[in-house]
Structures are given as C-alpha cells and as structure tokens.
View (tube, rainbow, N blue to C red):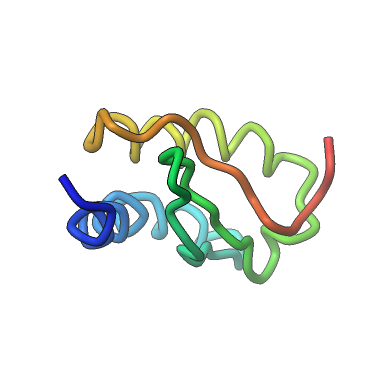
Length: 83
C-alpha cells in the first residue's frame, strides 16, 4: 500500500485521540509519514510543554495509530518536551 493511501487512516486514528487532548487544551497535527513508516506529529497548544506528552505519545497516539495501521513502525514528535 502506498504511503499516501495511509494518510486518511492516520488522520482518522489521530481524530480518535484528539478529544482527550483538547480537554486539556492541546492537540496534535500530522506532519509526515517517512519512508520507513514512522509517523511524524507536531504537538499543539498545551501538549507542546506537557511533561506527560511522552506517555500520551506511547499510550495514546502510538497505540491508536498502530492499532489501526499495522504497517506503522512508530510515532515521533517534531517538537515538545524532550524526555
């Protein structure tokens, strides 16, 4: 399957997590899907400086995306708190 065909699936997975992020004033933006099937995201709002963003990344975003799209290897943020 081409990378471009995965974009709507990635957005759909992110949409399932967004309500939880927005409750705390945050959000996430899909930036790119790399050639090695890593999803790059950008934290927005409160998520940019949240010390829990690493946990949200693994337990929320990565699980949601990989659960719907098995081809995805991982998820990485291009900004936010560095752990």
